[in-house]
Length: 71
Image (cartoon, rainbow, N blue to C red; front, side, top):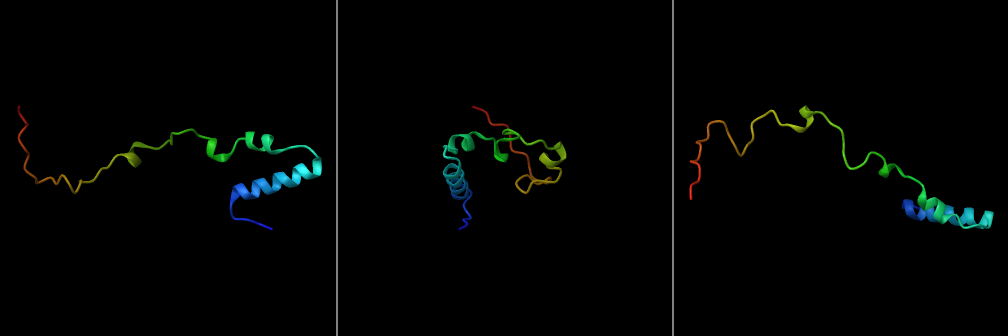
């Protein structure tokens, strides 16, 4: 049988490996690196991708400037 869930697939394959070899394989399987762990929390990109170069709808060029707030 097949499953669309990757965890179910991995657990099923681990069960078959354990049954054939006679040794538990789950701990070794869970300690392996997966693609989601590579790269860290940061994504490299250029400033042209990150910074907007067009006009913001909330700040049109012809808007009047509000006075600086005072206490």
